[in-house]
Length: 139
Image (cartoon, rainbow, N blue to C red; front, side, top):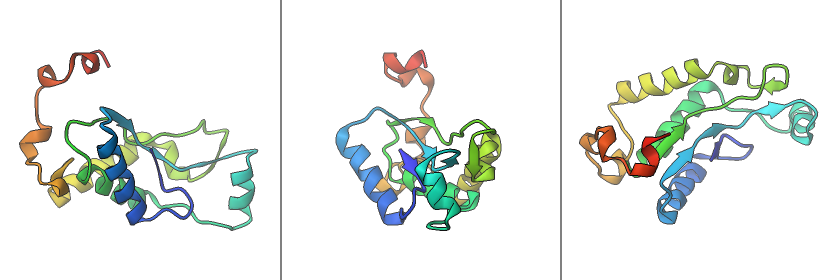
């Protein structure tokens, strides 16, 4: 699931979270939109056709997505990046741990968790590893 693609909005994030819920998906990888060299999107970015999200905006959108995602959906990735030599933008995407730390600290500050907006209690996301389906235990 790519968050922050050109033209995306909070409404898109909510719709995407709802779609994931409706499909019955068991896991999802979240990915920030980034621009890599020698692509048509890099040409459009350099021409100023669109702006990219800041790290703060990306974290906000991820948190929104998580709040509207069932706790039984395993989050396999919160962010990603291309190799430094291929990355045009955003520069912040090259520091995955900084992005993940931002998401975690902001969730703590807001006192929120996966599924909160759907009415799930915090305890729904604090289940032990043993309660996961067998096919997820080896991940």
